[in-house]
Image: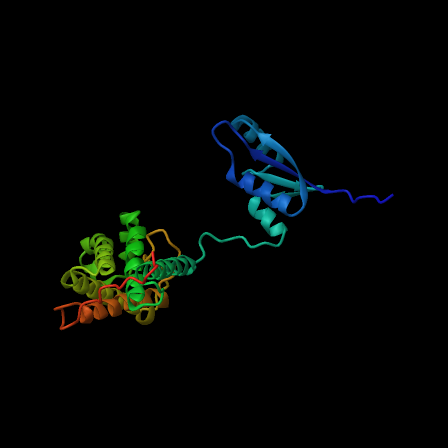
Length: 268
């Protein structure tokens, strides 16, 4: 008769109260099960019960996980125990910008396909920049005060005239929206050129001349995106887009109108 190995077991203590269920406790339980452990799940149902548990085990937080005779610790400690990465909330990363650009590029390709029947068009490139400007402005507008504070660390115009740090996200969003619509180029083009050029000069001076290690306010005032090449590229894209729109807009810098989309038979 074949004997089955004893399942691996873990003991979990986590807060489960009427008005609060600890999210880290749920994540710890899920991770343990995913790693093949049978979980002995102990609920701490009141604040007094939680405080007594912390005092008994001399810990400051819950959840707490025990495997065998060893106290592993909290959720982050459990991840380390299994050899998984633990994110550092203070670490700088370009991930938010990369994800944002991937999403706005996908949106632009999708709209191009819906309108023209193909994702690869000149308008898709224009929409990509316009969508990106609108979403970047939206992120800044979630907390204008926080954005303005971070922006004032490096923007050369905002340092001279503080109200510009509050105007910037509204101007960026408006210019992006007008570029998406292909409307009022006499307003969107100068606005995008101005904020793009000031932004590019500010980033270049702070990063490449003054050699300062700063965080970029491009995705809002609470981000950990480093100020650098990506931030400079964002501003250069805005300048290039404004120049292109100015050259192609009817009656603006001698440009021609965008072609009216021709619907492909059978296209949505």
